[in-house]
Length: 175
Image (tube, rainbow, N blue to C red):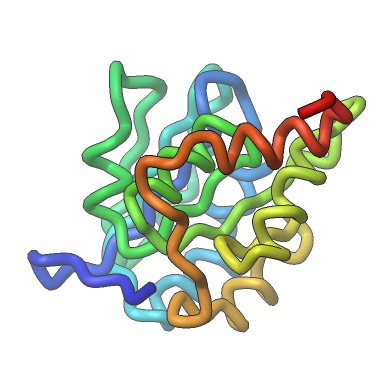
């Protein structure tokens, strides 16, 4: 799965869904990650921050050389996902499925602060199948350095039952 953006800009899209995951936004807008994204050849980072806090006032100083934008929610983030060369997403099933169906390189960051976190199991299962790579906020930098979108397997289009099967297995529902 190779990332290609038609306009020549290499773009990262970060989504936390409609909820908040401030730690992910703080991590992505840190000096270390912004510098790493520049070194990887990205020129634009779009952050969908949901109900969370916007990046702090000083992140623009760290973002030199990167065009960084943020918004809360939209009716649809499909165009943002399709236009991205890399999607960094929280581990919500809806966001994961949307990125996989769009055949975009996907790096999932699990929120370790959630109780009863089935998101970890979902990310693990899809990583085992080769559809995505996952990490947590503290390992995002090393995960980005090692990330190779060409090793990811495409998610079968038009097969929502595959994700349902994964979710049923994780939730221990009888199928």
